Image (cartoon, rainbow, N blue to C red; front, side, top):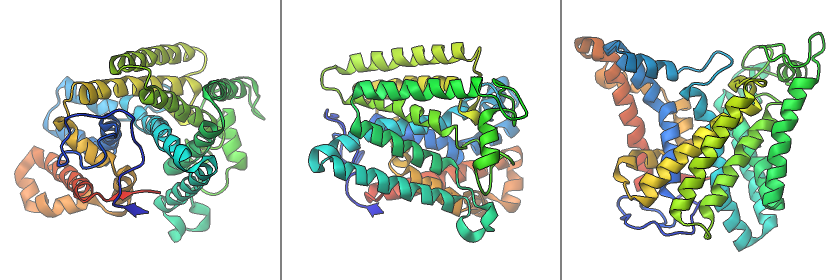
Length: 387
């Protein structure tokens, strides 16, 4: 549903110094959270092509390193590209603290549950639509994908948030991470062995092969598969802890930054330590991967909160805020519209050949400007997609 009203994620503290022109939504919003969400989406909607264009212009080590970081690790390990999706799930957890708390306070727990169920269902259906909907043969429909994983993580995390207090959140988070590790480590795969994390040889992949119907992204199994949904919920729950911290009125802003940064360092350290036995693997969403990804996400959130909401350095983040206020809209637009082809209408053909080595970079820049321009148009007219 498209709405001209303010979004429902709000902070209890006032963010000073934001003019209506710069940030035409409630001043009680956490601008840093919107900016971080937009920063995350920025790498999905054009920044990767931008780096590819730079790579054709320059072969220096910095550009090569950046290009490498924008490629998924083939199996075990971690690049920046592997952070983008789990950080979005983490941000979903942060955001729902503000939105669901207000819903419970104003309309009650039952209304919050209905809202969670409705949003999850709509997002799940949107995910099926994203991968082709019913335009493809029935057997090619992808039941589990990126948006579906977000929907399921939001569904179960939202219900845990509504029906349990902080100790319950901790219990669920630990149970999901440790339980997933135990299943993957000690339950033998038929025809294989317990504790084998190799592609196609592990329990999560075996369950997908046996029980996940229709299309699977990697042939017999899916990186957003059935069993790996469990740690994805824990991923979202870790965002809830960050959201509760930011919403707290008992802590000052500097204390919040310190706790977010400290938690980030601890989570990253714990994740890489766990990696010695349970490898960091995005395609399995291993428990160690969740800790590493959420640790880096917490560090980035601390940095954005410090610079934007405490220091008041906001103008540089404006394009990120535009994107971050309509992330699903922008994500779907890139699925339905070939932005790169539109960009070629402006800088393609003979003009692009005239640019020489800068041709691909020009296309990437124009494509990114188109995306940011659409986000700005929606933002300035206060049009926000709400599920």
